[in-house]
Image 1 (cartoon, rainbow, N blue to C red):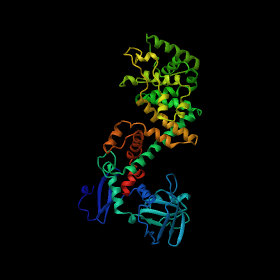
Image 2 (spheres, helix red, strand yellow; image 1 turned 120 degrees about the horizontal axis):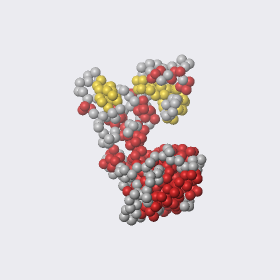
Image 3 (spheres, one colour; image 1 turned 135 degrees about the horizontal axis):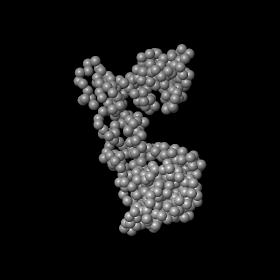
Image 4 (cartoon, one colour; image 1 turned 60 degrees about the vertical axis):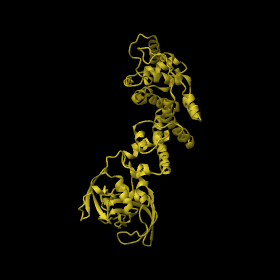
Length: 460
């Protein structure tokens, strides 16, 4: 980056293009160049992790500051840190703390009108450009943090966000990370991803009258559709009261007719006897239970491998619910990966052994769920719902979750492949799920200051 900066900078001010800054001013101190247009989030990071010299802190009025506790970081409305403890001069203070790039930002954000800021004991800033007063007209002590941050940390921060046509900000430094730090962060990211997914599960639970079996059916249906037909299968499950499936699942023909019919795959006309048998059963169920498919989404066949045709996947899903009366109970009781595989040891009905569609016969094959497909179900359905159920029951077993996810092979997609070019990062499904979380939630949104990898690189 420094090579790209103009050589003539006698005034100490130059410009550089950066991925998150547009024409950001820089200033020169002891032959190093730093961002003048500082990010408030970076100052939060510096304060939160005490990444500054603490021995000779002074307020703008020359009073010594002795820090005891930085306080609790607040990401919601109100002061940035709660319950900080420090001494200013001879006076011991306990209260809240606010951080800004400039002192005048206090007024820009209208804090002088908000009583939530009356108990701020220290205003920490990068640049002091005005005095700040409480509503009772008393001056809030101000600490300018800029002189106490090391050149090393500032340069690392600058380099991390430097404009290079990179896939992720830390692409060059990623291979240098310690394996211990990386593995700990990946485990944290995986559970963070599970936490997010568990919120979706709880929403489904609320919409399903606290019926866990119904929730599992909706989740399985969506994932049986894979990427292409996820929405169509989810729509089918959403518009089907699970109590109806419960009533017919003892009958294999009716179960398959119900799912194919609700997925709008029985609306055409075919001469095939099996198609007509299914259609007859569905018409009976439709009349009996007042079913409708008006808002449904018709599944796609285009560009799918035959084994992933919606007819095949729905027949397998029907087979699962015909074989097991209580699928949710069985997967919760499964204590090993092998036990989970046993639950999903199902195949299509007899007709589909010689067909992929209703219109044409094919070579006879047994179309059972493959281990690779079951692995995807474990990753995207079984573990998220087990995690959510454990939290719901206050009986979460993190070790059991880790045992299952680490025994599954890594997923294969463009994101995982790209990470693996930076080093052999992903060797199991925990890694691949964590890396998807890392890329989508942190890298793509420049949240390096919230990322353990970014923290390590800046502080390193």
